[in-house]
Image 1 (cartoon, one colour):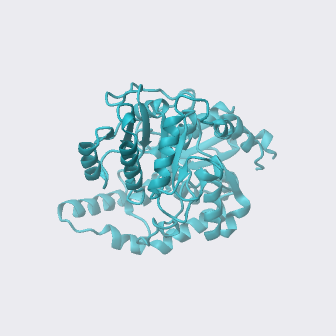
Image 2 (cartoon, rainbow, N blue to C red; image 1 turned 90 degrees about the vertical axis):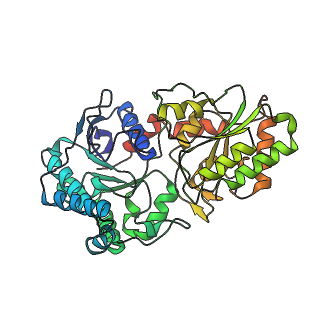
Image 3 (cartoon, one colour; image 1 turned 180 degrees about the vertical axis):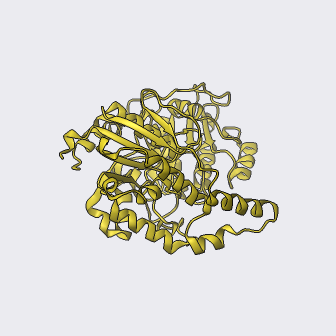
Length: 418
């Protein structure tokens, strides 16, 4: 049938709890924008909490806690915690995945078997992290499900398929790769948040190329903007990085550039702030030292609620997107739509070849490699000078707001042929 008749979508999501990860925030934004685009949704989710989304029917899938796999998973966990014997890695080398994942998959399959798939036009699987539990479940469903299956791939898989410096070979690598080969064979559509990610994954799974659909992370217009935290003074010129800093996302270049800016512009010291909203990370000790040395710098020690972080992003003077030092970054950061929605300049720090850089444009003025201290320093100076002028051009953001909107999402789905 033609896509114009595509109306009813079954969403199988791993989580719809926006507080458990940035991935879940992105998946919920997509679900809500699909509803705004006019599609009828039924959401089955494995959050294991009775979470409801306004005006969207949601069903919480229950974990099967009586199965043999559940008993094995808990036994392995107890041996790990109490005896300090780690069986998970050797077990994954044998089976490819954990007993917990197998039990979770079967729990999802049991719930899906109660559904009449003929009542839906499309099945969309959404996951987080490296588990892809809903995708595991769909592979166990009959072929009539696969004809309507859109597998959303948010990150490379397995980890050995990540670009450097993230790539590493994990236990059960071969079985994990075979799992994704099966997805690429059986899913009718392969959806990605990023064009570069689609191309990257297609280089590993060439059979999926003709199934490509690009669904970028969404701007959600009904976010509850929380109260600004006490440490945030919106009268200042606030440079904000919000998000967890994995080891490869090294903020040292940004910190050095900020210190250099303060040294060369002492008159700005009363007005400018650099804020890192992170929570505990490998850089926490460095941040503590920096706060002691530079009072204009602040880093959170604990995780903040999403509505609080979003409030800071929307009131920032500049939002920072910081990616790894790498030849390429095919990811579209989850914070990207939040930064676009703020209508504030973005200081983009990362590889030249990245999805963020592609979307903002190769001529985007506020881009630098993460370790290019001089370039970052120059950008901070330019942004500070232009803070009260009309010179800071965010016109590119207008096109991106359209690209990340329900209107564009609807257009994308209308072009699908099922």
